[in-house]
Amino acid sequence: MFNEVPLVNIDTKDLNIKIPALTSDDINKYSNYLTLRIEKNGQILQDWTALVNETLALCGTTDKTEAIATKKQLESEKIAIAGDATLTQEDKASLS
Image 1 (spheres, helix red, strand yellow):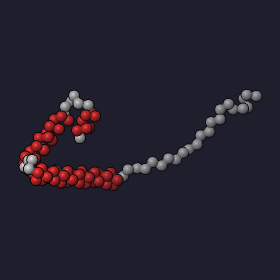
Image 2 (tube, one colour; image 1 turned 60 degrees about the horizontal axis):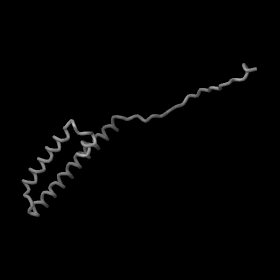
Image 3 (cartoon, rainbow, N blue to C red; image 1 turned 180 degrees about the vertical axis):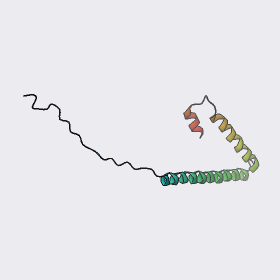
Image 4 (cartoon, rainbow, N blue to C red; image 1 turned 90 degrees about the vertical axis):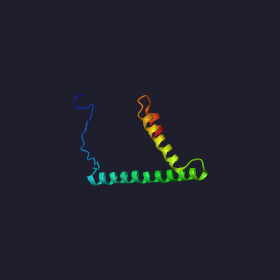
């Protein structure tokens, strides 16, 4: 009697799964997009820095060459701090 009734009924079925493939064109497009974004953000940073320097010079608090020197000093300190092995990843991310 038990031999006639299967306890577990297992059926198999083939499934076709479509996975999109990245082409070299897609990779090149994204790489070019990121390159342009870096250049554009760099230009925006330079524009804002120039604006801040001109504003500071206009207010009489500092001159343009002193502002540029201060900016370079702060950037070098930031790089030195970011390279410090005792900082956590969160601290390094906050400096970026």
